[in-house]
Length: 370
Ligand code: HEM
Image (tube, rainbow, N blue to C red; front, side):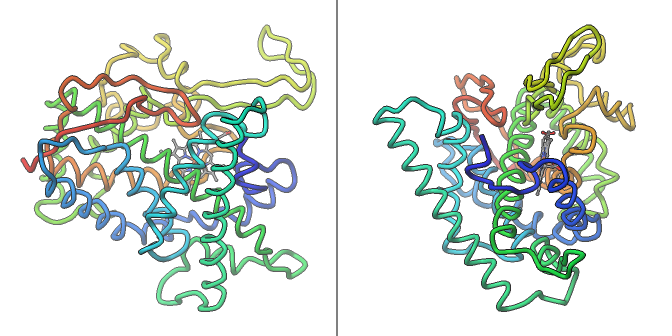
């Protein structure tokens, strides 16, 4: 389903090709490299606060939409080493369009009607726009070279990679990898933040606990990466939000041969689905499974990896999880300290399970300075 968009990058490849890609993409996510983007993330969050609090309070802010814009900008900065500037708006719209298209299934599989043809055409146009921008940015980076004042950004790692035969990655390989990281790395984090804000809006005393924690640890200064280990409640809220509303609610595999899973026969070529949504709400594993109780994550230092699996598990565990958790914690700490937020009166929130788990009608909110 994702291959028409992502090509043969890390998420959509298999076997030896996947193994080789995982090996050369792993250094992109080394802790020190990822942490150098903390300041840029915090600035984006502060900018969002300024934007939200300057708006007319009679109009709701679109929390899910704006958080998606923020996480897109963050991932693009981390991967390509710069902001999208004026092309950001067009890029963002094109990403929205392809997200909507892949969310509703593989455009090639749908019946041949005029409506579907029009949808497919807009998918193709949006994909061409993203492709052109990504290729342009890669070409510009090849020309300018890597800024050697710090560790190379994520694209720098890919540009420096050489195969055992001494070959660099082709433009096509670079494009597929960049596209994969951009697409896998923003919508998911935006949803984790959106559901966190929603749950906090329904539990004001927990939102107050987070603010007390952030004020105690950070004072009046912007939260920093070095302070994140001390922001235990902030981290617990994000984990509990991903337990109740895992951004990736189902993970699937195709069986390569006949197999047996406990009492079930799994014939070759079956589709096997593992659902974090179901596992995270299993009463035998999680007491009070449907209740929002972030403290459970303060009390358990590291949950069983196959009881809590927002980032998947096994060899294909999310490669960007450290990046995502750092980003979500910095953004949530900044938002909780600097704004009060309330779900827009009368708005009903229902989860909708597309590629990610999203609020069906968005997340309109009222925000104010405390
Ligand atoms: C809260 C945010 C995130 C969530 C919930 C999430 C979730 C997941 C899950 C469940 C998988 C496993 C899929 C499978 O097994 O089929 C995965 C894989 C992956 N994620 Fe994430 N992700 C997040 C953030 C990110 C970020 C920030 C990036 C990159 C910048 C990223 C890049 C990837 C890639 C490339 C894979 C494929 C890894 C492989 O197959 O080797 N993700 N993610």
